Image 1 (cartoon, helix red, strand yellow):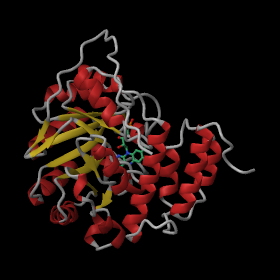
Image 2 (cartoon, helix red, strand yellow; image 1 turned 90 degrees about the vertical axis):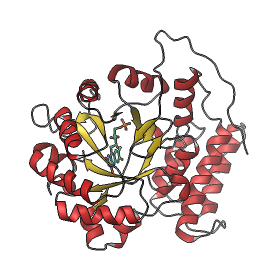
Image 3 (tube, protein in one colour; image 1 turned 120 degrees about the horizontal axis):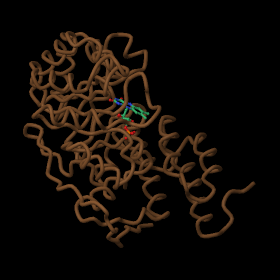
Length: 355
Ligand SMILES: Cc1cc2nc3c(=O)[nH]c(=O)nc-3n(C[C@H](O)[C@H](O)[C@H](O)COP(=O)(O)O)c2cc1C
C-alpha cells in the first residue's frame, strides 16, 4: 500500500501568509519552524520519528525526571535513547533542585541531545508538588537557580517550556521569558494556558505575543495549533519564531507536511488517504516492536503502551469504533495487521469484522 497525497489546491487567502524563516537556537537550525510538543505517554521515539519523516523541524522527549536520572533509574535513562533520524532533538528534564538538574543535564548531553529543555509547565501534582514544572512560575528565585545551573552544566543550548502563568494572577510568561534570557536560555516555548487551566478553555496567545516582543531569544508559540490555518495565525498574531504542535499530531504525523505546504506555498494538501493512514499505523506498531524486541516478525509483542497511540490513527476510518475496541487488546504485530486489514476491507466496501 502506498499512496502519497500529491494534489494541491491553493486556498483563497483573506490574509497573507507569514514569511517563514528557520529558527536558530545556537547551532541548531530548526527548519521548518514547526515543532512537535513533548507529550508524556505519546511522543516516544516512534511518533517522533514518524513526525520527523513528515517534516517536523524539531522533536522533544517526554518529560524526564532529573531525580530518576540522578539515581540511575532505568526507566528514566530509557527516555534518553533516540534514533539518528530524530535529530534535532531536545531532551526535556524536570526538577527543582539545581544540582540534580545539572547532573541530569550532563547525562542528557552525553546521550547526544541537541538541546536541553527545562519543563516549567507541567501542572500534574506528582511534578508540581515537588516545586518543579509549572510551580517554577510561582518561585522565580528557584526558577533562576534551576535555569542557571542547567545552562552552566550544558554543552548544548538550553530552552524552557512554560505556560502563560500559574493562574490568572500569579506567574507570567513574559516575566519568565525575560528571566530565562538573563540566565542564558536560548529559546522559550509558551503554552497559552495557565497551569490551573490544565487543558481546559482556549489557549490565550496574547501573552505569547507579549513575550515575543519582550525578549531577543526565539519564542515558540503553543496551544490549540491544530490546522495549517491555525499555524499561520499563530505566526501572524504573535510574531513567534516557531509553532509547536501537540495533540493535533497524535495519530496524525501528516499535520507537519500539511502545515509546511500551506505556510511555504499557500497550498492545502489533501489529508492522507485511508491506505496511507493504515500503512503508517502499521509502521508505528512495527517500529514499536523493533524498538523493544529487535524484530518485526508477525508474532512479535507490541507493548501495551502503544495501544492508545495506534488507536489515534483510526479516527474517521470506517468501523473505527470497533477497530479501537480491538486495538486496546492487541498483543502482537499480527493482531494489529488483522485489525488494519479489516478496516481496509471496510474501506473497499467489503465485510470487515466477523461478528
Ligand atoms: C497527553 C499529554 C502529555 C503531555 N506531556 C507533556 C510533557 O511531558 N511535557 C510538556 O512540556 N508538556 C506536555 N504536554 C503539553 C503539550 O506539550 C502542549 O503544551 C499542550 O498539549 C498544548 O498544545 P496543543 O494544543 O498543540 O496540544 C502534554 C500534553 C498532553 C495532551
